[in-house]
Image 1: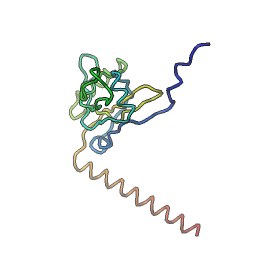
Image 2: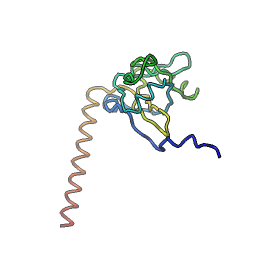
Image 3: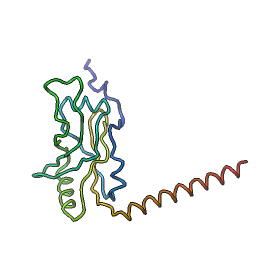
Image 4: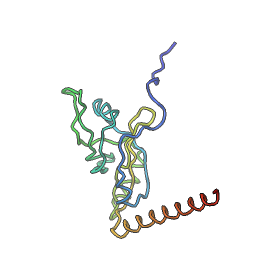
Length: 165
């Protein structure tokens, strides 16, 4: 009987790192899920839940997408095989997605930022987004809308509690 090679892979999505401020600083226009080309020590470090997407960005180079400035710290038990913490990493995407991203990112004010780094069915994935930078007044308006939404939700839940009592 053949051995099941997928035993140790837990199904579902296990979040490693998230760039929460990206949704505050940018209008998210489109999102993509990409695979990553990683070394063994990078995967082990990610499995420990250690990574930072804060300064990360994606650049299209010669019909290939590269992830820059994502910090994956060195693996503690690694030896001479350890990786550089901020090296550029190749993204695995379909050609038509890369071409679409390249044409859109050349427009003024558009950039490609990583939103989340996670494991999906045992494989490392990164969620990237085509984004446009927000102005300061846009950020304030978004915060105001969130506060208004919270206040209305609180008022509705308080009214429901009064009806029950």
